[in-house]
Image 1 (cartoon, rainbow, N blue to C red):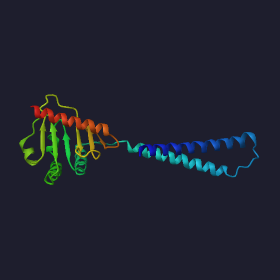
Image 2 (cartoon, rainbow, N blue to C red):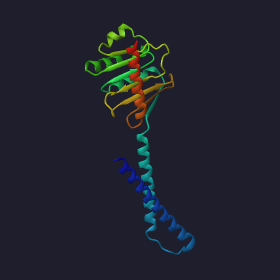
Image 3 (cartoon, rainbow, N blue to C red):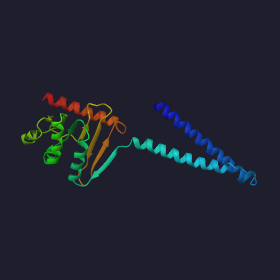
Length: 212
């Protein structure tokens, strides 16, 4: 299918290029060879080339935008928590990887969203290097807590949705601090390689936790 689309696009570009050459040749003939000549179809051909160029720009723009991830910048923590509530509610499973879980424990509404997911039978995993307070574990009873016990906190901070459904994954990666806290959202079109690396980190984190 990809090859068909690619060849179709190349054919369309070739037609556009040839049409533009014909227009240029016609204009050069009128300007430099015979300015009294009549070419009744030249205006239509020029219009066709313009339409083709606009169509090519639109097609390439749509094709390019498909492979661009979504990005949002949060000025304060409430914006980040609001995003997390919305993001997690769209998934059939969620794996949260964080160098600290305290920010999650402090937000009752987000905890409620996660608890509702768990009550629906959806798997929720939380991976962190440090032990988690019992009170938080009780609030999220049914969640899977994975503590790696690493002495150096990892820099990775991300949430993976639908990790068990290949091709349906969505990944939100956080970096920076407020007011320049940036979240980049990938899917299977915009970042399959990034999603694969996130899965590798999750798998290795589980292996480290089980080895402790």
